[in-house]
Length: 268
Image (tube, rainbow, N blue to C red):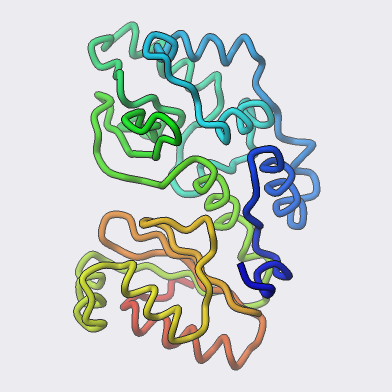
């Protein structure tokens, strides 16, 4: 990791022992009351949830990052996890979701996907994929707990993606949010002569001197250079996100190229 990243406002990589400190230090720059408003889950509620989702039956263990999340903000994360998708993440709401499954559709209980986030319209969840026991990736599942799509590499990255997308826009004077359709996404790939979004964004980043931030993955790309950063969510074969910056002329030039080369439209 370069010196410029270390000296920037971007959240740093680290270990599980300092995960909460890294997250809270980043968020507290923008919301000093956050650490007083979040609330951790009780052990008995976590045990109830594990009983309902049958984790113990399969000898699964939550990822360390999610255990930390539960201990510090499992009851109330002050809106952190529903940044990308509207829904419910508190232990009580996930318990209620699993109680409903036991009562109405026990046959849909999954031995592979354990959900931790319920979508607002109750048409699916974010789940841990326990085909990867050590550090399960996050997938989207439907109301029958069946796989729909890949979502994020792991919970730690997802946690920082949510924090970054919620708060990073407050770091800078200039901000452009953007979005594009599936048709525009295909057009961008064609115009950039690439087959996938990773190659397209990597090419753009290299051209303009951005560094890829550690909590990026194949659905979420976070780029940074001194004075400018961007966030891209490429789910569902379309692009959405924001680019922010302080240096007025540099930001104007790069953001214009950014929107044009990625075939997206500004929303603000």
